[in-house]
Amino acid sequence: MTLATQPSRMTILARSLCALAVALPLAACLGDGGDDAAPATPPVTPPPAAEPTPKSISLKMLGRYSAGQFGVSAAEIPAFDAASKRGFVVNARNGVVDVLDLSTPASPKHIGTIDASTISTGAEINSVAVHDGIVAVAIQAATKTDPGFAALYKADTLALLGKVGVGALPDMLTFTPDGKTLLVANEGEPSDDYQIDPAGSVSVIDVSNPAAPSARVAGFTAWNGKEAELRAKGVRIFGPKASASQDFEPEYIAVSADGKTAWATLQENNALARIDIATATVTDILPLGYKDHGLEANAMDASDEPAKLDIRTFPGVRGMYLPDAIASYTAGGKTYLVTANEGDARAWGEDDDAYWEGDASKGFVEEFRVKHLVHSSGFARRRGDDLPPQLDALAAGALLNPETFAYCGATADKPGACRDDDILGRLQISWTMGYRQDATGKPVKFNAQGIEDPTGDRIMYDHLYAYGGRSFSIWDQDGKLVWDSGAQFERMLASDACKVGPDRDVPCAAYFNTGHDEQATFDSRSDAKGPEPEGVEIGVMGDKTFAFIGLERMGGVMVYDITDPKAPVFMDYFNTRANWTEAPSNDNLAKMGDLGPEGLKFVPAAKSPTGQPLLLVGNEVSGTTAIYEVARVLE
Image (cartoon, rainbow, N blue to C red; front, top):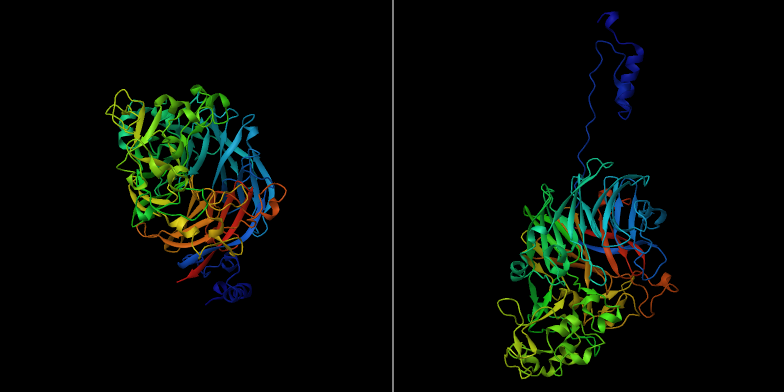
């Protein structure tokens, strides 16, 4: 080697240092530019370690933020941004999104708000979603029947990026997996007197440029005129003078993993809407059918009086799933949908005395107790109390089919013991369905003796339809039932194995089917919708998929392994209500714990500030955001 080509001492020193300290910047290892300088070798980044697959999981309390407001929906829907380590929680009481610093989830701190009043005077935020540093919010107009907005903000600075108009009462929104499209469920609820009933719709918004989002509408006008056909398929369309597009009220949206298809729950209609995202078109309405409470697997407690554990079958009673939240996941290359079967009745004008005094133009209420529906003396005795004027106009009274309800003593002209409080009398059902109809949909009339008679003034109920499935369900992409939890929730809450409270030391059965806004009262919700599952969230850990289901009334979260959609496995139930003996109020809120879970958000370990998976739960009654750690027992 000649002198001219020999490396300098500095070059030799630099190479020695590189050999000893590979962490030095690559530029320091390139030599002095001589001809014999070693070529740069890019660093090799090892692939991320695969997340371990847990054998089982459970929840444990990690932290809590309280808005300090009881019973006013001060914490509803949570979302999370991994980069800024911020939580975003809808505070419906204030019409804003509360922003929480979750860098230390055990000690969340309130650091700001997103206020929709800057978009539109008097507007309120109903929902929030986050994707890669972008926060999307659904904004309800000051008059809920007017069109609303969707707006986009930066998660780290809360700066407004863009906004776009959407339909009436935007109630939930979600991003497609790639983050380029935002879907908004525009519920389009009627006014309280049902005189204004805007059309429901789903807005499909291109947010690839957050500063200039553009919206298309996936509406339901193509289904107008097909109401009879839809009813025949099992879709509930029953609002006063409502077309299909007015009666459909999208509640919640799930999106397929490929971002091509969405499904929206039409809660009151007991159906799903399937949406092609590329064309912003509703391609199908999928009726969900009804569950048979005459089957042992679907047994329920149907009465709150007398207060007792009484889970049993009720032939002739059908449960309307009426799901609120929906989520999607993939198993075996197929998409499956998971629903929380809350049940929700239409009840408009119920606070207007004029409605109950007989003015049908002032509202519409479909709920009625069985004991009042089938009283031998007819409906007139309930006028001015709880008799919907639309039911009063339909008939003078109602009968039970003696074949269907023979087990509780019904005869052609009398309900027997079926209307007793400890059997079916206290159960809240929908009077709008279940009675016998002719081919045109008109009620078949009977006389008071239970004999079919065109001049009669009675209607005959072949089945009674109760609210909610008291369960969660798994459906295929065509809305066909794959699996339902049946009576598992109520049976779990009634079991000796079930414990509630932060320390899991209070017997669930002592407060079975209690309410979320009252002193814990045993059996108080059994006549309505039981534990009332409302929210659902999916979490993937390793090779397994889990579902988290919030029980709105009883409180707490049910956890299932749903990896096999045909055979889910119960994992855990955790309820962090701390005080079960006092009636909750603003005065004792600090010691109540968490009441009324509404929305849930799973944070995977890879995005969690702690490196452990988390579950955020917005509790609307206590106004608290609970942060749970998902504890894993590994294979």
